Image 1: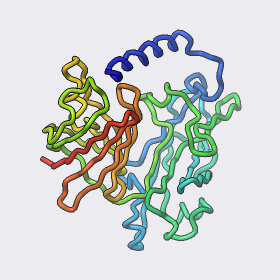
Image 2 (image 1 turned 60 degrees about the horizontal axis):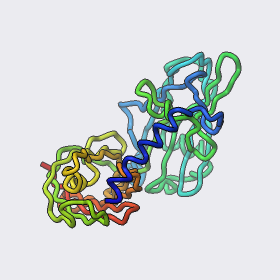
Image 3 (image 1 turned 180 degrees about the vertical axis):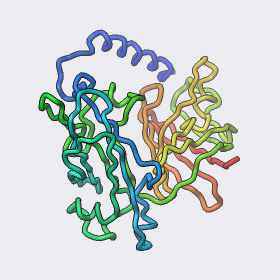
Length: 295
């Protein structure tokens, strides 16, 4: 049972690392001691860049509100990162914002004007992303950039996991998505782990929920459609594993780390009959497929 044993090793490592958390590194700033913005999507506007509307010649409108999340922040530059494949372009969307909260709205033409990577409506492509964050200036003159030039985060897990503020919002170029709800699931799978019970498994009945996070992003209540539960509940382990996944015009994808430390990839489709099929595989060589039917 190689994976059952391996579950306890990462726990020991976490306990060890927690005793030496500050290693003096500077790769990620602890911005709690300086300041952070709070960037939220404007709820009355689009939560994603609607490719259907753009291709139909209609305008789109997205926006964020910017305010101080924590610290002595005197001004912000609201910055955007347009990600197209391996290319990332950074642009200032609003400079020297000093009134909080402030709302910044952007049309399709505004985005074309701000980013050289966009010249016409045809340049908006499925899978593109726009990240919006802020460069903040503290009263002592310190400037903190929340994202690196390539759009990756420049802050630690204390900021990422905060329930008090959000420092970045992502707008996917996608299609309208409406997958939220409770689903009946039939799952199958096979494991390389000799400790897995009911292996291989076929047509295992389970129930899961898709929770809508906006913009084609969802939280799936159990990424494995009950398969890990069928395999490992006998050991007293609770393996309902939540994960986020994205719906881009009917194509679903996601990635996460399972409780054993294995990398898991999800790929799925929204079928013509309204059901959803999701295939998954992990770095141990286990595979599975679940078919979801809305209740």
